[in-house]
Image (tube, rainbow over all chains, first blue to last red):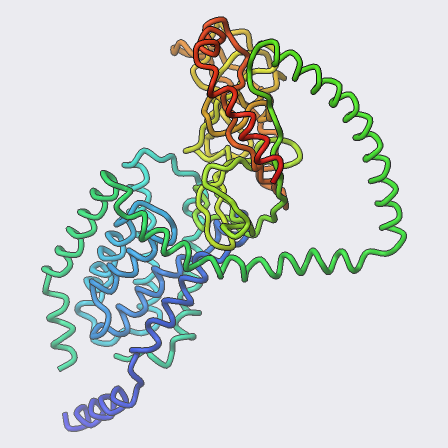
Length: 170
Length: 310
C-alpha cells in the first residue's frame, strides 16, 4: 500500500513536470488544417488521413482536462468550413466520437498504447459510417473510395502519438 | 483527483447533448440559409489563399527545372514543330477570318449582336479541392488580375468550367463535371437546345430532358448555347458517346464526354468577354422581339468591344 502511494506520487510529480498543452494545441490544429487542405493530385487526396479527427481524438484522450466536447465541436466546425461540407456535419460527428472515445475509456485506469490505438481505430471507422449516413441522407451518391482514408488514418495514429509525445499528459 | 475529474466528465451527458443539438441547429440553419455563413466561408478560404500560393511553388519550379534541363536539340525540334503548327493555324485562321466576316454580314442582316472574342488570360492550375467529391480546381490568378465570379474557363479543347470564388491571388473553378454544375448547350448538327449537367464523374456528363424521339446520334458535338446568360455561345463542350432510349422515362439517357482535359490539364484560359448571351440561332419570335426592343442588341456589341479593347 505505501509502495503504491509512492509510485503514484512519483507519477503525480511527473505529470506536474509535463508542459502545459496551451500552446501546442493551437499549433497542432494549424498544422493539421494545413495538411487537410494542402493541394495534392486527386488520385492521392483520396488516401489522405483524417488529420483533424486524429488530432481531436489525441487531445481528447490525452488531455481530457483541457479538451472536451466543445473542443471537438470547434474543430469539427473548422473542418466543415475548410472542406466546404454542410456546416455542422463534422461538428456533430466529432462530438459524437469524442463521447464514444470517452465511453470506451471510461473504466480503464491504465491505457496502454495498443489499447488506445484500437479505440482510435474503432472511432475512425465509426466516423466514416456516420459521415456515410449523412451523405446518404442528403441524397449524395457515395463512391467506393469514400472509405479509402480509413486505413491511412489508422496508420497515422502512432505517428501523431510520437510527434505529440511530449504532451501526452495524463 | 484526476481520476475524479475524468470520471465526472464521462458521466455528464449535458455538454455532449448540448453540443450535438448545437450542431444540429447549425446544420438546419446552413440548409435553410446558406448565405448566412458565406462571410465565414470566405474568411476561411481567404486564410488558405497563401497556402495555395505556397503550394504552387514546387509545381512551378518543377516546370521551370524541366524547361531548363531540356537540351538544345529538343528545343530545336520543338521549335520547328511549333512553327509548322503555327503555319497550319494561320492557314486555318485565314479561312476563319473569311467566315467571321461572312458571319458578321449575316448577323447584320438579322439585326443581332456580334460575337466578339474578349481578352484571354492563361492561368496555371495549382490545386484541387480538399474534398474529392467536389470537382473544383484552384488557379493562380485572382482579384488582382481582374477575375470575376461566373467567368468562363476554357482550355485548348473546350469548356472547363466557371469561376466560383475569387481571392486576392487565387481563384476556385467549378468544373463542368461537378454534379452541381449545368450548362445550356446546343447540338451542332441539329441546333437542338438542351442542358448538360455534370455527374461527378470527370469523363461523363448528361444531356438532360431530351425526348426519346429526338434526333441525337453518337458522335454529335455539343456547344455552349449562351442561353444560361453565363457562358458566351459557341464554345465546344463535348461529344455524345452513348444514348440509351430504353427505360420507362420519357427522356433518353444521353452521355456526353467532355472535350477539355478536366483531369490532366496544367493550364486553363480565362475568358474576359461579357456574357453575350443574346446571340442565338434566332427563331421568328426572337426576331420580332429584337425589332421591338433593339436597344439591348445595340449595347451588347459595344460591351464586347470594350472588353476586347482592354
